[in-house]
Length: 371
Image (tube, rainbow, N blue to C red; front, side, top):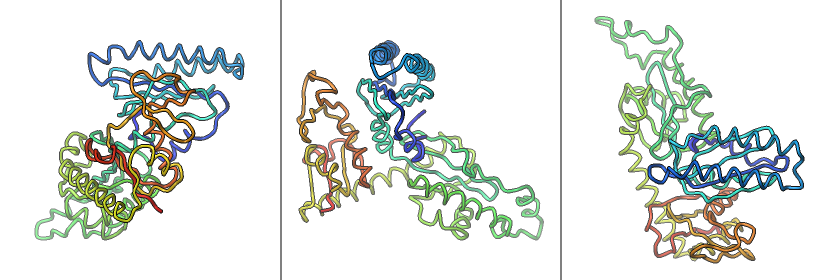
């Protein structure tokens, strides 16, 4: 699975307590040759290390070990390294397994605990700027889930929505000398209300920026009869795209997405400048880390590829260079930004990823503080 498919409900389930040992495996992968040639070997080595850890864990019963080996093998079998991204995350308990590919570097790690290690998924999802696309016509509406430059159709929760047979009468619309607008037909209005109800539920369960795609008349009617689509991130006035394809939808959305990204960067720049003048500002990894853990950060801005390795000791972070000694148990964190992002989101903090070199003067990470 890819992180654009990660919903709030799925994440809540992943973060729930589980019987020990719940196993999390993470490793970096490569999108293309020649780097991806080594991914299969690295994955088998990581699996062997996980199995060794399980077999030597005194808290794992013999049956637990057998079941965990089985679930881990199934998780590995679900992985298609020909379509890798930047990281791989595997989860397994005695009765379940999951495999996730993420568009963000993750460290190589095996963790046995009573919960899954979710911070790499959370950070990757936040960095991908997920969004919804509603493609609407008088007789059909489809919902698309986007993250970065990937897009796929969402099925379920009322989508795709199709007008019941009889509500879409092209012959009636084209009758000579009598061309009442399809969009003023009461059956079409009723269909649009159905779309609005389904869209409202989706935006409530999974809030994201919404892009509307459709003829101006269809979009206007949807906004007239409901509330979910009144204030979209942008509208693309083009019909015939309720069935995509993804490539064409992305092409049509590109200018609107670029404009939204520019607005977002400008908004965050202004918020940081205002925070500096009010002295409610933090910069640098250690300061922002402290603010995030205390729940004091309202907004955290971080450069997209800022992923330093640090040592965590006594609540403070010390940057490391070269090959770190001691590993996870000694406080070494190769994904400290991911951990910070997950912690911040738990406190209701807005996390924004900005282009590289945008925060150079602030050591690549900064925050607007609540107090």
